[in-house]
Length: 184
Image 1: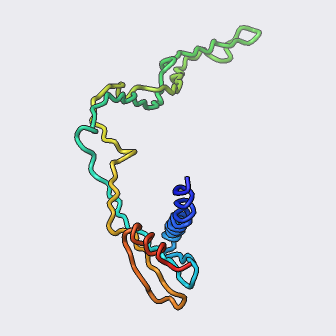
Image 2: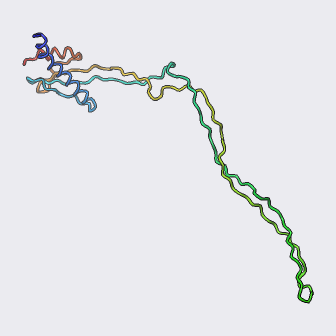
Image 3: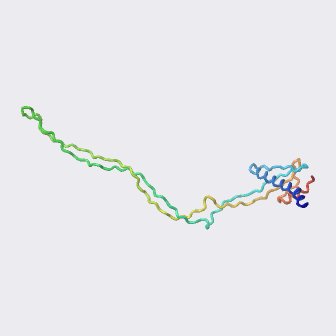
């Protein structure tokens, strides 16, 4: 039991310091500014975050799967003029008119009257192409496979109050051992 309490008393602050330093470095990564953590006794820890490169890879053949895709019909609106009644000619007769005494005032007349056709405009929807089902190979477009590759490890830089570099470690275990050797 004594071993465990010594362990937590000694290593918990160290791990907390490393964790908080890496968390601050991750937060500062967006601003490209390394955060400084005061370790006491005039020693500061600066964590330069690791560098990563994310690349989008081409979709492998096994992810490209054929799918049956329904292509809907396309329609077109057509305005048609239809004839309700054909044009025709009508003979108009005007009868003769007589006076009271029976004399002819006006003789009978016949005239040809042209009656135009009666039309109506109808708007209707016509299928341009029928619906069909086709087989297509659809790649995984919404979640392309990405690979995140580490280019450089995080660097733990220990500095004094003047900003002079005391030690630089890429391995967090060596940084932890350096912190353990610091005087209280």
